[in-house]
Length: 391
View 1 (spheres, rainbow, N blue to C red):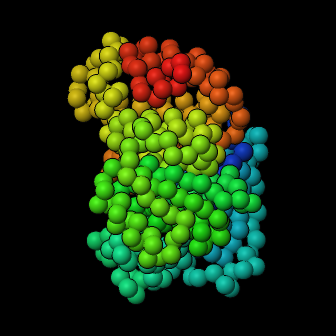
View 2 (spheres, rainbow, N blue to C red):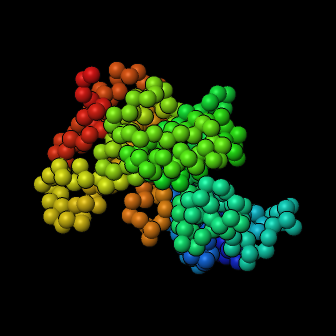
View 3 (cartoon, one colour):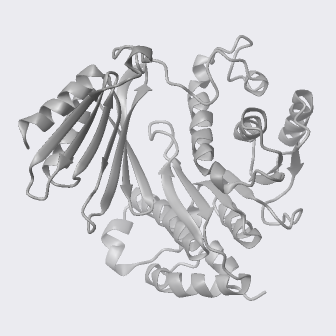
C-alpha cells in the first residue's frame, strides 16, 4: 500500500476518527461495505466495526491501534477501492485504481470549530434517551434516579434500551405517518422496552401509536397498566394472555417479541407474517425445539458435544426463521443486539416487508425453500408446521 494511504489513516485516527466508510468492493466479494464509528465500552474508547455481508450486518469492537490496522488491511488487500475517513478536523477520501494506485484527497472540515476536541469527542455516548434527562418510566423501573442519572447497576439495561431504539430508528420509514400505528409486543414482561418504544415513537417522534403488550404474568400486567395510566400513555395497554392463542387483532403494523421462550417466538413470527406486519423485531430465546429434534450423520462429530449442539441449534433456529421471513417477502437481517459479555441470547431478527405475496402462496413458498434443509437436519420446527399446514 502507498505510504500516503497509511499516513492518511494514521492521521485520521490521531486527530480523532469520527466515521469511516469503506465501499466500492468487487462485485463478487462477500463483504460489500464496512462502517466504523467510535464507542465507549466500560469507560474506555473503542471503535465499532459494522461489516455488511449480504443481508446481514456483523458487529465487532476494536482498539484505536486495531482500527488503523484493519482499515489498512482492507485497502491493501483490494477488498475496497474507496474509503471516506472523517476526523474531527479533516475529511479524507481514498481512491484505489484498478492497478492499485492510490489517490488521497484531504479537505478541512468547515464545521471543525464546532466539533469537540479529539481526546473528548466520544467520552460520553449520545443515546436516544439521554443521560441526565429524567424519563418517568425509567425512574419507576429503577433504571434512572429522579435527577436523570443512570443507576450504575442498571447501566446495561439502559444501554440495551437505547440499542433497541436504534434498531427502531432504522425502520421508521417503513411505518405509516398518516394514520395510527398498531404495535404488538408479545411476551413483554416488565416492559422496559415497551414503555421505551411508546415514549420514543409518541413523545419524541410524534407518531400516533397504539401499543399492546401481552404476557402471562398477571401481577406484572397489572403493574404495567397502572404505570401507563400514571404517565398518561392512553394508547398503551397490557393484556394477560398467551402468544399462541391471541386473536385480538386482524391487522398489525409492527410485531415485537423479545426473549419469548422457545416456540413462542415461532407463534409470534407466524402471526406477524399472516397479518402482513410491515416490521418485525424479534430476539429469540431458549431454542430447545431444534436441539431436541436434530439428527444429522455428517455433523455427528460436532453434535456429540452437548454445548456445541446447543449453540449450533440456536444459530440454526434463528437462521431458519430468518429464511422463512425472506421467503414470505421480508428483507431480513440478523443483528447483534447487545455485547456477548452480557448474555449469549444477543441476536435480533429484524424484518421489513418489501414484497406483497398472496396469503395462499406463503405456505408453498416456505415449503419449497426450506423442505430440503429440514430433511437434512431431520427437524420439523413449529414455524414451518404453522406456515405449511392446511387451514
